[in-house]
Image (cartoon, rainbow, N blue to C red; front, side):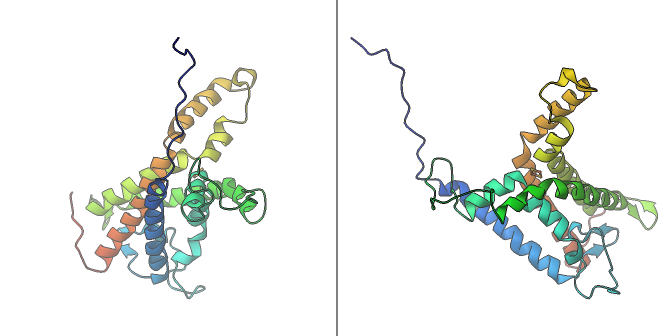
Amino acid sequence: MASTSPTVHAAVPTGSWWTQIAPVVLGLGAFSVYATWRAFEGAYFWASPYLSPFYSPLLDVHHHYWPYSPALLILGGPLGFRATCYYYRKAYYRAFFLDPPACAVAERKRNYCGETRFPFILQNVHRYFMYLAIVFLVFLWHDALHAFVFADRFGVGLGTLVLLVNVMLLTLYFSSCHSLRHLLGGKLDCFSCTNFGNARHSTWRGLSFLNEHHMLFAWTSLFSVGLADFYVRLVSSGAIRDLRLL
Ligand code: FES
């Protein structure tokens, strides 16, 4: 008599887990090297009317108080926001610490304690970096809008579009943040039992939709910010001329 017991599927093969972390190592590694070089370079960050996002907001550009690259003055804000991001934490714990390398792959150490102890318990400051990120976004939107102004006249160059797409992707990355979703739409067990319940539920649903794509926005915004800086550098150094569209 044939057995009627349900089919038991074998576990997902884990032998190729490295194919999942290799792109993360390459992507984050390449960006880190490029961003570090550009942050320390301290030049070619302005090609009127474009300002590199690595240098925005531009502080003490004439070195009255700070003798080094202006990018280093502001680096901590965006770096802290990315480094403590819930998605990036998973990505770089796996890719760089191999702890664990992937789902269903054994731990390297038996005493793994995650983020319950110093120093990784400090990752919980992500919410405060999120507040700071709002300030950076305001400046980046200002820069993107200013990129439409060529010698007091309206215009559109390729750099305008590059900066505009970049700040839009950064806004999507910010809007899909887990902490933002919790802050604005979460923290509730019952939406109908609280003030503004309908509005909070709508907010939660909208942010949840964005949150499902947080990994996509994390990567696309990472590359766009690097490309935007690279474009400004090319124009500023005279390697290329900005393509004026309007
Ligand atoms: S969780 Fe990724 S930016 Fe907040």
